[in-house]
Length: 344
Image (tube, rainbow, N blue to C red; front, top):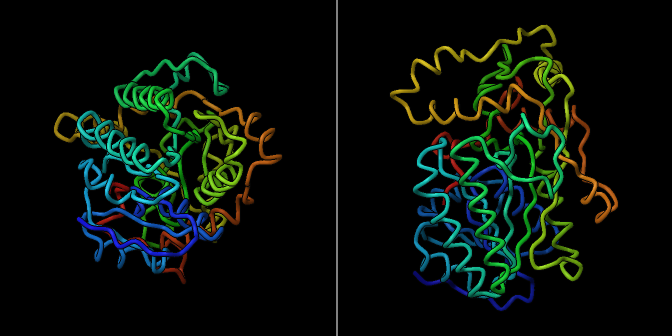
């Protein structure tokens, strides 16, 4: 695989998972600041057609699981954005760490900083309901243990010269849905809203991250490169709901159907299907996050940046529902074949 290098003086970022929710939004936030974006994908032509919002970025053919592909794609870049996730919750143990190892090798070879979107999977909501960057990571699930292992590997790599920036956030929502609870659980992309399904206990708090805000946070932090340490972790507060179900009610209101029914996740059916379906098994493993509140303390981020990027809820939901094709005049911008994966 060869990469065509250009002579532009603009800095270059390699995005792994540019067709996914967080990868695409970070790409857009960096582009708005003059960065050139290079995106790795196994099917560049198909990915470009499926991602019209990204415009004419540089697509490079390669597989995130092949270290040589990622290292070659990263030549000359200043940032490597690791936005890839195993699709549909499948085979985390077999793909999550190997993909990260490819990005680590590429960032090291290029002398680039590696950006890593973190999650709350690392933490036990029963032990801590309000978590800071220094809260002990005690995962309750296999995916949580993998996430801890990934962050530990990044910390280890930072001691060997790699520069790392991690921003942890709650559940994602945004115009490019990706593999998120909002786009795959609360609503049905491409269809006008008739009801909203809420997976959690109604009166239990829940944290949500509007992807453009999270991406803007990454971009603002990147602008402060000279003030960042070799291994930096920040928490993104996002939109917090004391009663988690309120996001479902707000979604119905913004969609123009305030009286739409709020249905419950049919967990009993998930339990029945789980023995035969890996995605259902993985969903069950994460159910604990819908039973106990877990809120991220963003004090460090606010102190560092002065404020956290924060789009008003109704505006954020309108952008999200428009992007997902859930408003009467909207057509989904998500290609069905890519909607569930941010994997390159």
